[in-house]
Length: 111
View (cartoon, rainbow, N blue to C red):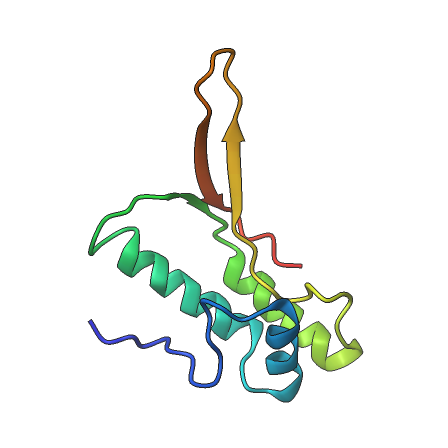
């Protein structure tokens, strides 16, 4: 399937926070575009294709939050270095034995 949310000037797999902020500030990419790109990658790798099934939850408001943060950036600038950057959280579950169980989820608490 064609990657309809491909990012032209940003390496989404290796970009640092500073590189993402520079791309946001220069207009190369918006937070919304980055969120859409990552959601597309999740759909291709986690929910179809190899069916990795590693993402437990996605915030249904992620795109709306990203759009609001893009608008805020235009009006008043970024609040912090994480402003508009999507965040993937890994949840660890502690058990009372020697086994450490881990699970990942993406609630999309974009900053």
